[in-house]
Length: 157
Image 1 (cartoon, rainbow, N blue to C red):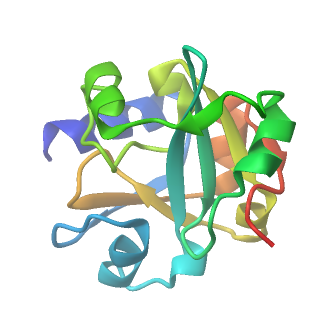
Image 2 (image 1 turned 180 degrees about the horizontal axis):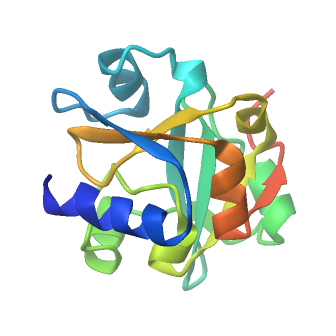
């Protein structure tokens, strides 16, 4: 198994998270990753890395939805300075994983995590596995548990 997915599966094993590794052709969006894995975008999660000042926030929403920055800002109390992290920032500060494929577990990166409530309607969701060729299926409640994540409405209406 490639190093990035191996790093993630070790983390999941250490935190007693049941998972299934899904290997697929190289994909660069959560929706494409879902299609390549045989699931709909509504059954997949995409993470969005945000910056609030010098701090990062990992937001996790269904791949079929778009993030509402205003809702996120209200939830984390950072409405004025919240912005998307740049690819350069992500590459520099999260070097162990591919940009655009960070696993949805904030504790790996020591960042705050928030999860859209819609994901908790699923028994399992497809998530990035750390590179563009691997995903994992996990119970979204395990993501919230392991990350100590806040849950809220993060998607645009």
